[in-house]
Amino acid sequence: MARSILYFVHDPMCSWCWGFRNTFQQLLDRLPDTVEVRKLVGGLASDSDSPMPIAMQSKLQQTWQHIQQKIPGVEFNFDFWTTCSPRRSTYPACRAVIAATRQGNEFEDKMILGIQTAYYLQARNPSDISTLSAIANEIGLDQSRFETDIQSEPVENELHRQIKQCRDMHASSFPSLVLQTGGIYRSIPVDYNSADNMLNSINELTPTL
Image (cartoon, rainbow, N blue to C red):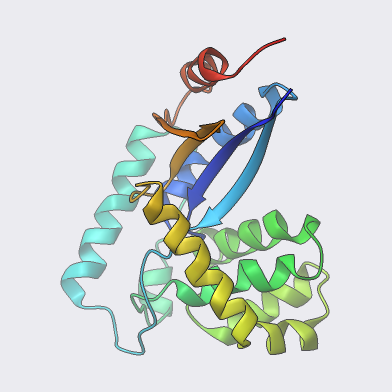
């Protein structure tokens, strides 16, 4: 029987993706064996060395507060906004996920969690290559290889391939879930607090024996 594919479209520096992490894991734990999961980085914000405007910093802090209200148990360390120099730039973190995966698929989620932990709990800036390199070392990657890969053409090409695939599937928000069954792609509405509705939608659309 042909397998279905559930695409998880995310950005490691997307605060809603951080909020969704626990519920998404609950969904993964309950998915039928016939569903393969593939993660795609969507590229929330392109490269920039410019300081984040104060108005945008304020808006994002409000978003963090809103997420805490909407999704019980999600934590943020607001010291980030005073101890770091925020930039609107998530492409480096996306490249880091791709570069980590080149050393083994098991490092994909380790890098995602490492970035999220650094950003949201430890007030470290994953827009900085130095932070991403430190995370690579912390999760057990070959740090020297990682530093080469993250700046390499193959990683850059893969980043843009994944971004294009997300756009081709009309997955423009983060996080997004898209189920492929045969040649048909269907959006699965994200529920931040319960895996039940998402699982029911997937089961209804997934071929059974």
